[in-house]
Image 1 (cartoon, helix red, strand yellow):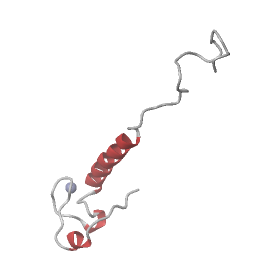
Image 2 (cartoon, protein in one colour; image 1 turned 90 degrees about the horizontal axis):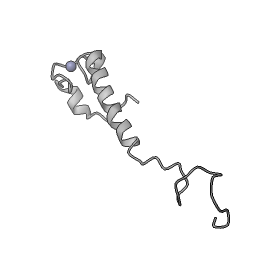
Image 3 (cartoon, helix red, strand yellow; image 1 turned 60 degrees about the horizontal axis):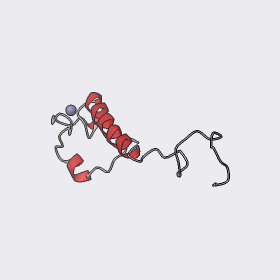
Image 4 (spheres, helix red, strand yellow; image 1 turned 120 degrees about the vertical axis):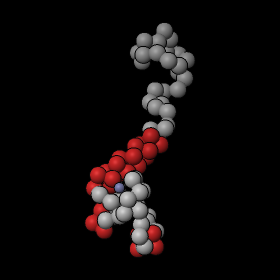
Length: 77
Ligand SMILES: [Zn+2]
């Protein structure tokens, strides 16, 4: 979940925190602190969640709206 493709070169050299732009701390790389990591991670998860729920919830059977068992006729399907 937390592992993202990070360009090694960017990490090796003096990288900057993508959240606030400060100097990256090796312990929290590629961020400068845990807080920034959480912020970025949260933002990232949010985006992913939004994409996942992009699909329209189609749980009802297609054909006609109405509660099941309350149909006037059972001949036509
Ligand atoms: Zn930061």
